[in-house]
Image (tube, rainbow, N blue to C red; front, side, top):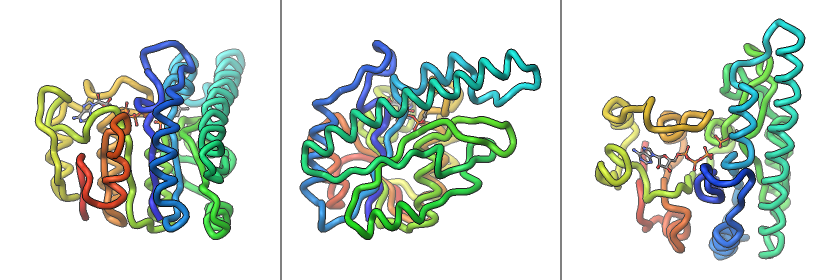
Length: 263
Ligand SMILES: Nc1ncnc2c1ncn2[C@@H]1O[C@H](COP(=O)(O)OP(=O)(O)OP(=O)(O)O)[C@@H](O)[C@H]1O
Ligand SMILES: C=C(C)CCOP(=O)(O)O
């Protein structure tokens, strides 16, 4: 089984118009997956991109539910609007995958996971397991979540993958981004790290100025690397450029170009 994360930076321009969707790129990614399906089982998780992130930021979802009624109700509205935006993104993905003959089936993240400060505290993976047995491609997405500590939260696609990896033990996890992999510095300034062991991640996190690296509400590259450290305990992890044809296929085959993290 392979878990593929389609990052928000791959399927949309996060600084562009709200809800812009790069259908061409998503179609090409679907075609690459179709080259390995059904011999290989897949779970696909997509990020928020220009769909969920603007609402999450505008309504301060990560700050949780305040005591005061008016402020809390504004945030409840924002919670719903963020989720609806993610459902619209998800619908676009499902349409493209189905058109390519792939039985992608939407699993609404906020209905199957409960978080505690943004990490999954409880998740029902049985539906996902059954879908896989029946040869579907479960498709999840970064979403809002009911949170045990804060009332409400954002659940990043990256955190979902950590949980799924622990529970389902895939052979490989591939993160698609809009750069060639993990850089030892900012992309364009640092060099591409092609091979990384789990033990080397802490040092890299220290060398990267994590506060400046990501601008979205779920922590950008630093969060991704921190999650990759947990994921690499159970599975090989790849970070590759989802905008470049063939890179996903290379990671799936194991001879790809990007960053490969081993345990
Ligand atoms: N050292 C680094 N290595 C790789 N990418 C980096 C680094 N520093 C900053 N970045 C930026 O991080 C971005 C990827 O993180 P981002 O959170 O946007 O990922 P994503 O998975 O595509 O998005 P989303 O969280 O919306 O799904 C890249 O576009 C890149 O410019
Ligand atoms: C902002 C929302 C709703 C989802 C965030 O998921 P991510 O883009 O995978 O971090």
